[in-house]
Amino acid sequence: MKFGSVDNPENIDFTLPKDHLHTKSVLNKFKDDNIPEIYVGCAKWNKADLKGFYPKGTKDELVYYASQFNSIELNATFYRIFPAQQFESWYEKAPKGFKFFPKLNQEISHLKRLVEVKNVVENYLYHASNLKEKLGTIFLQMHNNFSPKDFDRVVDFVQNWPNELPLAIEFRHTNWFNDLAIANDLYQLLEEHNISNIIVDTAGRRDLLHMRLTNSTAFVRYVGANHKSDYKRLDDWIERLKLWKDEGIKEIDFFIHQNIEKESPLLSAYFIKKLNKELGYSLTIPNDDSQQSLLL
Image 1 (tube, helix red, strand yellow):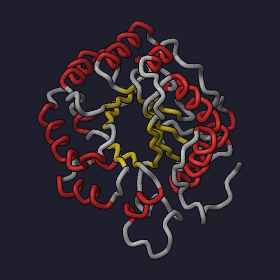
Image 2: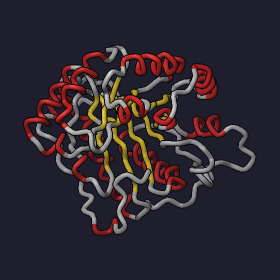
Image 3: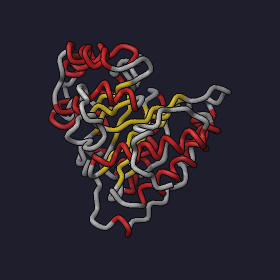
């Protein structure tokens, strides 16, 4: 994932901003004694990107990947709408408890830009529904140049989204966040329709760390810079997730990317090990017996 990449990450202030004023109040609405669900994964499972992750002789990459992680951010669905049979195949290869988090197709977000997309969305969801209980939150990623001037399109899309399917949306145009009136209208819309406001942590776009949750789910897309600072950044996320857990969060979806994706499993293993220790989980640590030494 090259989005937000920089040539000199050592010059970036990676400090996580404080939470938005209303994030705590949103989470407090859901506070109880239940432990939040947590899903951590990479963006891809193919061997070409995750070089060195798969043992020699691995016959099926998804089967092995799903034995090491409990989720995948399914970016392939952005580029094409797969047939129902493909989703059925993925379903069969993943174990109980595993979840797929598919990205909505580019025809919806980038080509038609939310205009007259009803049939495309319905077709996409018809196929994706074959993931059954392994279907996690679906996410919509808007183009960098999709700005608040088209807010009415977002309203229409959100109002027509089927309520039974969890949805998260990622906005990349900075005016969604730096214009206070627009930001407040957007957050209210997402809250009213129980839609997650995706947080992106990448070196070159610190403005996307709005830290504003709009429901009980935190959907975080973390992009490492293939730099030693990646580990300290994840340490800071552990502390923030601990805070959100105390405040009432119900689900954490955390996907780790790298500018050079082959390092994503190693970084994920570090993060999961910390999650288990600091938040009391028992997630599988990817390739625990064969991982290279981690920076602890």
